[in-house]
Length: 324
Length: 315
Image (cartoon, rainbow over all chains, first blue to last red; front, side):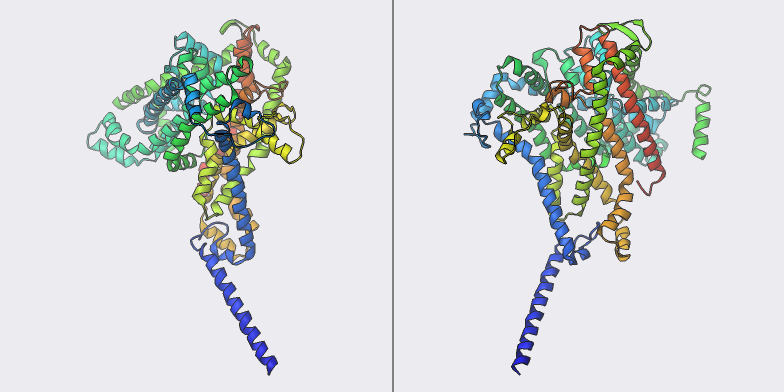
C-alpha cells in the first residue's frame, strides 16, 4: 500500500516536473516564434543543441562587437591623458582626469576651425560634382542613348577598377600645368569622374520603367523637360546613396589633397593630421596625446554622420554590393 | 537576339544616318562629364603608359627608351620586394579577412536578439575609415609603454612584442587592422545575400531531415556563392592598391622595406626620390605593372558578373 502511494506521488512529481520543463521549453521557443526563416527555424529550438549553438553564436557576436568598439573607445579615453601619463609604467587605462579644457587647448593650438572648414568645402564640392556629372552622364547613357554612346560607356567601364591615383604622376603634372595647385577645384571635380558612382546611377536609371519616358514623350515633353520633371524627382534615393559615398570618401581622402594643397592654410583636416604625424617624431613639438585628441576630433563628424544616417548607410552598402 | 540585331543595325547607321535632335542633346549632356573623365582618368591613364616608355627629367618625358624603365625597376631590389609584399598582402588578407565577414553574416542572419545593435556596431569601423584610424592603430600597436596591447601582454605575463617593427609580423598585423576596418561592410553585403534565400528551400531541407551543417552545405553556400566569388575578386583588387597603411603605420614601408607595396613605391619614386634619374618614369612603370595586375582581376570579375546576370536564379 505504502509502496503504491509513494509510487503514485513520485509519478505525480515527475509528471509535474515534465510539464514544467515542457512549459519552459515552450516559453523559450516562443521567443523564436517570429523566426520563420533561416538555417535554424523556431521549430529547431526544441533541441537543446540548437540552444547551445545559438548561445555560442551570440557570444561570438559579443566578442566581435567588443573588438569593433574597443579601439575607438581606447582612443577617446586615452586622448584625455597627459603627455607623461601616456608613457606611464605600469600601464593604466583611465586618464587621471577628463578635463574638457584639453579639447579647447588642442583646438586652439592648431587653429583647427580652418581645417574643418576646408574639409567641409571639399566635401560639399565633391558631393555636388559627383551627383551632377555622374548623374548626367548616366542619364544620357541609360535613357537618351545618343548615337555612339557605347564608345563612352566602354571607356568608362575600362577605368572602372583603375583608381585615379594609380596614374599619379601624369595627373599631378596635369593639375600643375593647369595652375590648379592650391585649388579645391581638382579635388571636387575629381569626384565627378567616378566610374563607380556612374554605375550606381546607370543601374538605377535602367530600372526606371521605360513606359514613363515614352508616355511623357508622346505628351510632347522634350528630353530636358523629362530629365527635370520626371527623372530628377524620381532619383532622390540614388542621389542620397551617391552623396553618402562621396561624403565619406572626400572626408577621408588624403593622397591627392596632400599633393595639391601645398599651402598650409588650405589643408583639409586629414591632410593636416598626416602632415603633423609625419613630422612630429623629428620636430618633437607636437605631443602624442594632442595627436590622439586631434584624431578623436577628426572622426567625431563621421560618427555624428553615421548616427544620423545609420539606416540609409547600412542599406546603401548592402544594396550597392561593394564596400568603400 | 532580336535586340542584338537591332543594335547592329543602329550601329551600321552611325556614320550614314542623320543626327537626330535627341543625339545632339545626349552628347551635350555627356560633354561636361566626358571632359572630366578625360582630365582625371583617361588622359592620365594613357600618358602614364606613355611615360613608362620614356626617360624623364622632373615630370617631363624626354626621349623614348623602350622597355628600359621596366628593366630598371625589375632590377631594383626594392621593387621586387614591393611586388612580393603586395602579393603577400593579398594572400594574408584572403587568409585573415575573407572568411570572417561570411561567418559574421551567417551569424547575424540567424540571430533574433539585438540584431540591429550587432549590425550597427560591427559596421561602425567601416564608417570611420580614414587616415585617423590608421594612425590610431599605429598607437595601439606601439611596442613602447604608450601601446595598450603590449601592456595587456605584459600583464598576462608574456614578453612584449615588437609588432610593426617585426619584419615577420608587419604584413599580417597590417592586414588585421584592414580587416578590422573592412569586415563590417563586407558582412552587410553577405547579410543581404543571405536574406534573399527562399525559405522554402530550408523547409524542404528540414523535411528531408538535413541537419544544421547539411543545410549550410546544400542550401546556404550554393546560394551565396556568386556573392562570395564577386567579393573575393573585389577584395583582391582593393588589397592590391594598399597604400595608406604602410605609408603611415611603418613610416613608408619599414622595417627594412618589409611592408613596402607597389602603390607606395610608385608614390615614393615620383615624389620622394626626386634626385634619381627618370624617377617619374620609374613611378609610371611601377603603376602600369600594378594596373595590369588590377585589370587582370577586373576581367575575371566582369566574367563572373556577366555569368551572374545569365543565371538570375542565383543572383
